[in-house]
Image 1 (cartoon, rainbow, N blue to C red):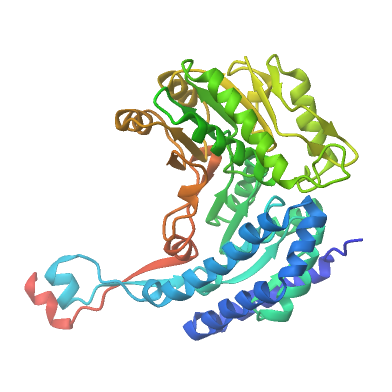
Image 2 (cartoon, rainbow, N blue to C red; image 1 turned 90 degrees about the horizontal axis):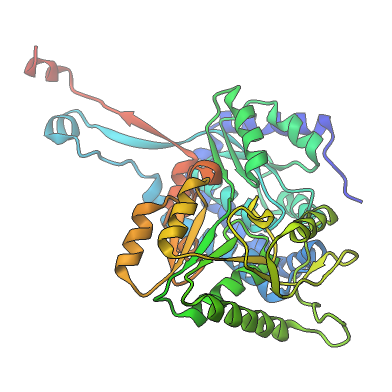
Length: 453
């Protein structure tokens, strides 16, 4: 049974990190690099435990956990170690000879202070450690709150972070809604939240009471658009993959697909083929549904939400549809013949259902633009004019052409949402800046006033 932080522990941890930041200890670049290196070893030394934790929480296959929770975090740390000296250095603004040369104008990057980092359950290791990496690199102290919905991962972080990192500067708070609510009542210098739009609004409201800056990494109904010029087999494979990995429980996943009428039937057929192919690769002998290596839905509550949505659809299941409450299993499922007002289109699915809507790319853009801005759009086309049209007629946090997830994997490229899919950016330099105060500094000589007085 999980052991949650007591109110006294929360208060002590809160006091400790603020006291530590006031000493200036974390501003030292050497200290920051040391913490990042220790965090790299935390991941490297405990790979088997991470794999076991994700197996317990989500039945996550080993290859998925290695790629998304181990290698990605280690690579993230190396990126920050490589860039920290450049990012932390003062910048000289392009302010002209008078201010730049004579007045010594420069921009300092100073740590914002103490940050609260609240992580999600779908990638419970990487999506809390990646912002922590950025916070440490920028010189901040942190309270981190892993998701209690992934208890094995939560307990792993609570046990291992104190063993590797400076506990005066980084503390782990465990608990549920009550503990998180208590944390949000306090003042911070920065809050970083990854999770649902619904909870993001709660976090933003709490931050507003203290005028605390936030980065909110949320989600939304990220669509794919498959045009009449697309490589249909590739589009089907990529969309099936997006729904297969982590059972579609990814903020960046394809929520639904808009497919041109000319290639609609072919897309359905090829997506079913790829779902079958992916499942064939992970089947275990002896399990009737052959789902042994497929991720589970994280909780019974989420399983019920998804199966109820499927039960209300007016669409037709053309592939899949199986589920098992006891094992929290839902088979990858394709639904056709539905409209943009269907029950499956009423919210972010966050599961392995793929609704497929028949629409031209122009109609898809019209539908997308009438709703909340998604975190990502995935466009499948061979036409540069179609790419331009979608870019000019939609808004999203990011856009990838002829692939999925890729824009979020490019080093030193901003990752974030817009509107209901999030505010602010991180990854690489943009993560460093998210936890930094840009301080303008000018030191003119006393005689400079003679030039204008």
